[in-house]
Amino acid sequence: MEAPRPPGTGPRRVRVLVVDDSAVVRNVFQQELSADPEIEVVGTAPDPFAARDLILERSPDVITLDVEMPRMDGLTFLHKIMRYRPTPVIVVSSLTPAGGALALEALAAGACDVMCKPGAAYSVGEMTADLVEKVKEAAAAGVRAPAPLPPPPRAATSCALSRTTHQVVAIGASTGGTVAIERILVALPPSAPGIVITQHMPELFTRFFAKRLRDQSGLDAREAQGGESVVPGTVLVAPGNRHMLLRRSGARYVVEVKDGPRVNRHRPSVDVMFRSVARTAGSNAVGVILTGMGGDGAQGLLAMREAGARTVAQDEGSCVVYGMPKVAVEAGAVERTLPLDRIAPELLRLTDGALP
Image (cartoon, rainbow, N blue to C red; front, top):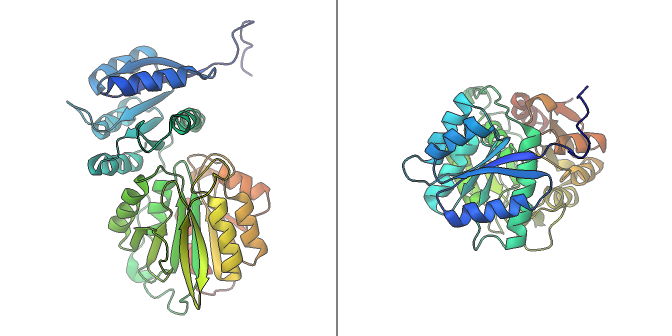
């Protein structure tokens, strides 16, 4: 049991180091983070060289890290952090092609989450709320580096889905989800059923995420624009800051992208997607809920299960944050809980019409 703290000291605050070459961004982040009583900014640094000394001196719980910096880019520095001083890192990136691509590589290398620099993509209120939330989530999650999962040979499963043409797999995730989704997709054959994905991610980064999924998996992964058919071999990613829903058009499933209020504090929301899949596809769908903070997706996954869909959750041991799957399990929405490396084979089994 932890020893009691001296009177008046209160709970320990999350110690944050801000690393960014922009003085404006450093000042904004320091001001907004320090306004929360549960967070303490222990330093700011304009580049990785100054940050290195502050990390050793002040032992931050969380680091916010820019990716496009002079002298050393954030991705290179992240690899050094994870090797020599593992610490939860939130990637901060501008909305440039280089920044977006590096941010996705950083997530694959072990960063907890990604957010946009203050600017057109965020209102001040949204930026503040997202920044504070992500820092607390990262502190709670800590550093976890699951072992790499080698994809199975495609030849072993290339014909697994030959009898199914109109099934839908719906995947929802948040913190840690970019890596989890990638590892599932690289283990699926080109004939896999159509997949729709809602990953909590800022606007425009979802385009880079979809491209990375396409490059890594060989599947036709795209950021949804609205009106696309959900067909075998296709992966449609909800665009940041917009909800994605499944609709029927004649005999086809198509996606709809629309604005609307945040649901469970998120847009896109996993619940919004899952509920639409429950209404539209019913028992012809499989729902998967992966690592992430909070409870978004639990009620939507329950609606899917009640509509006859099969439902799967990632287990605690392989999650970066066992939040969303835990809430879904507790709600009775989950049929099976599996480690990450067993989810792709389970999707093939469920969508091939095999008996349980």
